[in-house]
Image (cartoon, rainbow, N blue to C red; front, side):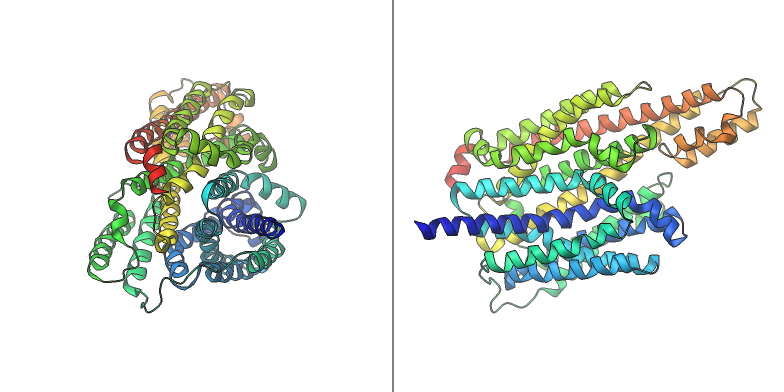
Length: 521
C-alpha cells in the first residue's frame, strides 16, 4: 500500500514535469509577439525583419514534429524528450544572448526543433505512465496546459518584457527546463523501443518535412502580403511544392515495409475526426485569439500585460475544467462533449459579432470570452483522449504528432484565411464609403490608399497621427475607418463561426460514441 502511494505520487510528479515541457514548447510559439517592438529598437531594424523571429519558430516547429514523434516511437520517448529539452534550453540561452537578428532567427529555428519534442512526446509519455481512468484525467490536465499556454503568452510575455527586457522571455526557459528535465529523468520510465531492427525512413522524414515547410512558408507569404493573389509565384510555387511533395510522400510511404507514417491510421474515422477538431481548434479559436489580442492592443489601447489580464475570463477555464474532462468524457461521451463544445464556441463567436461595433467596450467582451473559454477548456483535453483511442502503443507517438501538426497547420491556415476575410471587407468598406466633400479628390484617394496598404490594425495609428488630425473632417474620417475596421472584424468572426459549426458536424459523424469508445478500451 505504501509502495502504491509512492508510485501514485511519482506518476503525478511525472505529469507535472511533462506539463512544464508542453507549456514551455507551446508558450514560445506566441510569447515573442509582445517583445517584437522592443526587438526592433534593440537591433535597429524593421518590424518586418523581426517578424521572422516568430515565423522561424513556427515553421521549424511544424516541420520537425512528425520526425521527432517517429524517433520517439523507435528509440524511446523519454530519451527523445530529454534531448529535445536540452536543445530547447541551449537555444533559449543563445536567443537571449543573440548579438543580431540573424543569429536570433537561426537560434529560434533550432529552439523550435526542441519545442516540437516538448509538445508532441508528453502526450505519448503520459499515455504510457497512466492507465485506466487516471489516464483520462492525466490527458485532460495535459490538454488544459496546452489550452492555457496558447492564450497566456501575451500576459507572461508582457510581464517579463516590462519588468526586465526582451531577453528575459528566453532566459526564463533555462532554469525551468533544467528543473523539468531532472524531474522527468527520475519520475518517467522509458517506453519500449518499437524500432528495433528497423532502418530510419529517411525519405519519409525528408518528404514530410519539405511538404510541411512549403505549406507553412506559402501561407506565411500570403499572410505577409494579403493583397497578393494566390496565383502570385511567391505563393503558388510554395503551395504547389507542398502538394507535389505530399503526393510523393504518400506514394513512398505506401510502398515500403516500415514507413515513417502508417497511412492506415487515416482509415480510422475516429482519428480523422480528431484531426478535423485539431485543425478547427487552431484555425478558428487560436487564430481568432491572435486577432482578438491585436484588437485589444491596437484599437482598445491596452498594453500586452493589460491585454493578458483581460483575457483571463478565456484562460482560466482550462485550468478548472481540465482535471474534470476525464470524468465528463466517460459520463457523457467525448464525441458528444467535443461536438457540443464546438457549438458552444459558435455561440461565443455570435456574441463577439454582436459586440463588434464602434462603441465596443471591454465589458461587452467578458461574456463571449467566458463562453469561448469554457468551450476551449473542454475541447482541448478531450481531443487528446479521443485522438489516442484505439491507437496501437507503437503508433501513439505518431498519432499525437499528427494531431499537433494539424493543430499548428490550422493556426497557420486560420491566420491567413481570417486575415484575408478581414482585409477584403476592410478594403471594400473603405472603397465604398471613403468619400468626403471639402477635401481635394486626389488627397482623399491618397489617404484611402495609405489606409488600405497599412491594413486594418495599422489603420488605427494612421487615423490618430498628428498630421491627419489637422485635416478638416478628421473626426468623420476616423469614424469611417473605425466602421471599416469593426465591419471587417465582424466578418472575420463570422468565418470562425462557420469553421466551428462545420467541425461540430464532422466530429459528431466521425468520432467514436460512448459505447464504441468503451469497447476500444
